[in-house]
Amino acid sequence: MFPVLNTERLHLREIRESDAEALFQCLSKDEVTRFYGQDSLENVGQAKEIVASFAKNYLEKRAIRWGIERKDTRELIGTIGYHAHSPKYRRAEIGYEISPAHWRKGYASEAIKEIIAYGFNVLNLTRIGAVVFLENQPSSDLLVKLGFIKEGILRSYMYQNGIPHDTYVYSLLK
Image (cartoon, rainbow, N blue to C red; front, top):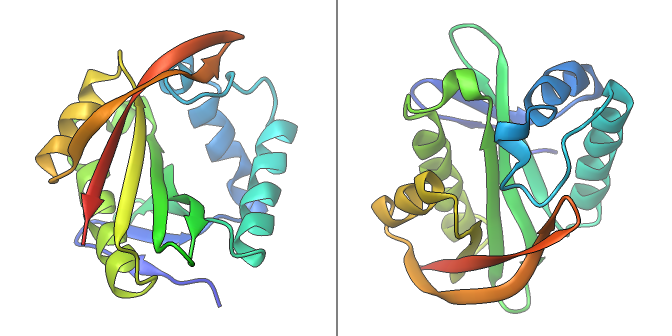
């Protein structure tokens, strides 16, 4: 059974195929994907493939990705979750994106805090990592605000539009 999480303003839930249009609207925007390590989506079919990959990764216990839904409007405004999950080593990496219309309203912070608690208390993680493009200052600032420590730079670690980019690596320990 997929875990559902709730915060004051958000409902974190399983992403369904019916969310493909909302996911496409978010991930087709260059300002969202420029630090995502993935090219912008060109059609809803690609969003459906992403939804299917989220479900497959969850069933295989390799990752978990929640849809971020506003409680007041029932609108899907982004996704958040863990990937590179290693139960043996009790670690995972966090990833998230929010549609630009909902930036700087505290939604990402609210969702991250909730899944950090889930990661430490339910998944029994010891380490939560995050990889952020050097140019993505808002995400770096958010992670530091939430207690993550910058550990260093991973050179040519992520590709965006065929170009390698350096990233910061952050961690939060239990």
